[in-house]
Length: 206
Image (cartoon, rainbow, N blue to C red; front, top):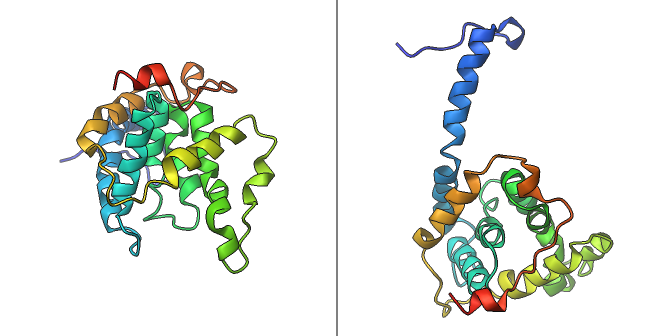
């Protein structure tokens, strides 16, 4: 018989109960990357009407980041930036950022969280009631230009059925490496640190 906790209300839990749960939660967390990779595949059945699927869009975005010499945080951020499309279509950017925030640089999480506002520059004026300049409310952020570049170079251009992207298996080890990090580690989050999206020297080796 599978062991369970003794309580029905949290307030009745014992030290043994909570030690037991922590052990299970630690093991569960170890498989986060695998669950995310499965969720990325499910983007293949997300929003229709585009020339490519959302999965292909994310793979194109990540491939462009990789080919630009971006570091692993940027590449994984580009891969997962639209992972909320299925379950949080009205705030998919915030959903994705919440998932990656404990494991990547603050800069990357911020750009993923706000990219929905920044991409409005391309089509906001074509929507009834749309705000093309929605990104302006973020103007004072130190990461403003980073998100401008994220959207311009990797996101908005990645709906091209003729673009040859790398496969998900190529990026899977990077996702696992990122989610194997200690969550909320200050050495990972690097609050206030900016790393360029493009590294020409690194790009030349890829």
